[in-house]
Length: 331
Image 1: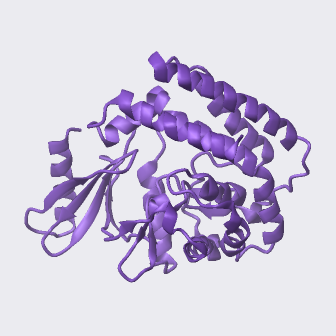
Image 2: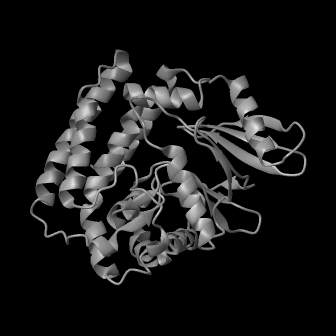
């Protein structure tokens, strides 16, 4: 669907809600997976998201995000956008537009970390009522599933056929990541990692971190982007928070965040220890995620979200970030 057709579809969806007039629709850049638009009707402003979908990646991004936000609204969580409407056929969601600024890594402190933990706790306080949520993207509920997930990602990266200087660099880096994983994988097999009970499955925002947060005028945080959200392992939710590379969070806050996030879990001490033991596997996973730019499906998704950036330049920039992450986390 071209940009003009998308704009028409957004207007049609708004008119179904009884909003008259012709809104001003402007693209909002910054996301890596979907197309987003600021929709200004004169009286209200909304965010429209057009979700990526492809035969090689059929994840229900719209369904996951809309279900999570609907659940959050139902249990009274106000730190996320209100879902307004969605068009399942055309993969479009309309949400409350939140005016705010991005959080920078240098500004992250304990209060921000605790606020993120409180949000995770709020999501899970009434989790028995979340019957409409699916499992999160790449959900893992056992040590074997965590290991298999990393193995799959590394297997795909080992097949990368990138050319030129960037291609040589990424092949070398993938070999180094594989070597680091072999050591961590073997060590993980020697650890007594507690099993995860069914009752301890959590509602995870997925891709959780300050890169998906906005600081609003009253000084509070609002959390956005839940296209991978759903039921998951608390260890993965916690690990994702400390591994996401865009706005890094120091591991010095690990205990405080985990205690706050798992406030409504009877077995919280066991779950915190489980998260600590599985963190090395999640660090490897995030190295792999950051290399998605070199996979065909990853490149297509980035191009869908923003076709103005040349692939070769995106790959060079991303490779610098992966190398920095690898050297800081895995060396």
